[in-house]
Length: 99
Image 1 (cartoon, rainbow, N blue to C red):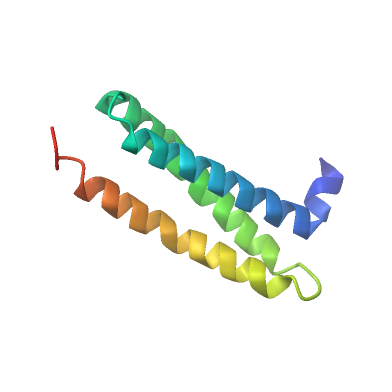
Image 2: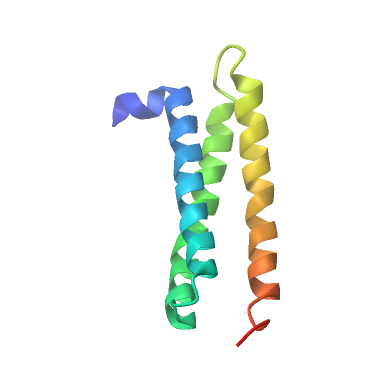
């Protein structure tokens, strides 16, 4: 574990993979009509703080990447940081859209 956190590229890559996985889970549960509002609410309350923390951690570690890979990782983490509030806004907007 100690070696993992010393390599900024691995931490940043793991952060992006975790972001994409959690984001797909949240969107998938939102699109499924089988899931009740209680389950979706519980998943949102657990997943969104993890999603935000992992993305911020990856963004910070992106500054320590050496070489040409620094800029793409900074841009990807910036996009993911902007996607979180947008998706939360859409979720709240469409929450009472259809019964």
